[in-house]
Image (cartoon, rainbow, N blue to C red):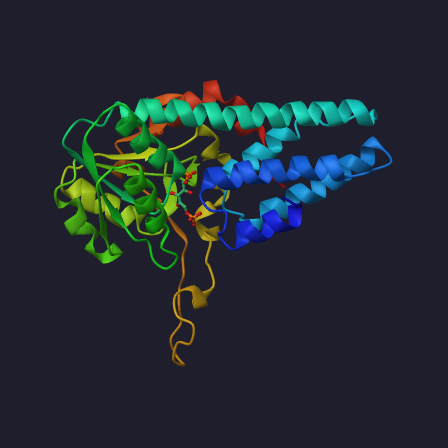
Length: 305
Ligand code: RUB
């Protein structure tokens, strides 16, 4: 897929979910490198850097994409064009391998938490959460899922469709019925778009509200996430830059005097999160950050601009 089309599809949510966005962005950059015909190594670096910035800007609040694109650009410097290309494509392969193998590991680790007879609550569409539920089903666990539709873009329907297709019973609720959906739940699983340096999890709007409702009922809340969603840049105030989408997604022609706030995400306080399920293990949010300091040092060193 071309760079321009990928950027358009990310902006329009045709490609949605942090991991899908990261994978598509890396593939688009890789395609771009293959089709580019620069005269020198410097020229290729310039083109890739420009393309990387276009992808960053397509959804600025996606650190998994930023970390992945920074990873593939690692050590891509020097004068030798062919060497530079081969380093870049090797990085692309390692990056895609990571996203794939981490995903499979998270599915296995997460599926161990699901027991027969459980009701799992989830919100929006997270490919990571889905992979856990599908793995649990594959290993013979019997459970049901309660999920919320996720207005205004209804990503909850993607979840409901995928799970129902795999034979997992799903009860689907409007967002404002989340308390009812949680009543019989044994566990809440949600994805993550970012994990901040203060150990908060940023995820689809509604996530904190539902995590609060879950913790009032002693329902454990797990965020399921590739560790590359950690975003050290949040030290500089991620919260103020949370994505606000077009008002028309909510109401095309609102009456005069009505201002529409269409926040895409919100941050979930670490106190509400029982654990983060990632490929490095299951840790409380603060321990997750500690583990990251030793297991993924490179992410801390990156500055994005
Ligand atoms: C999707 C969303 C998902 C996370 C994690 O929001 O909030 O929970 O991105 O997804 P949107 P994944 O639809 O606005 O992109 O587990 O697939 O990375």
